[in-house]
Image (cartoon, rainbow, N blue to C red):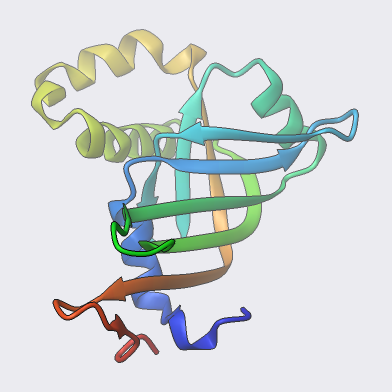
Length: 164
């Protein structure tokens, strides 16, 4: 990382993952084209889970080359008095693995649903029973994670302490 003065420790970077409203998965399609797609995610321990239809470009790319990057950003605010932006971001590199164990799939879908649709959890078991066979679930093992932030205090000075 070029700006070491903005580097976050692993704990803070994982907190960014847990707070980001969506993440962007980047991979390579079998024909060599780069491919990025926004995802709804949930982290369980050292893995980031996501789901989708088992067919399509995303899962085709992951089956071809499981090496991926996931990027997240939170608290993104363009500043009004200069050409700068406040943010907290995290980037994960890892290997994507298709989840085939039904119990692990349900655990991942429960975590995603609790994060994005907690008001509908009364319907979770019924919906999972109805759709588990046609829902693809993948996990990315967090092999490396970096976090970075740019924040300002009330006087407009950049905050750089307590990141490592």
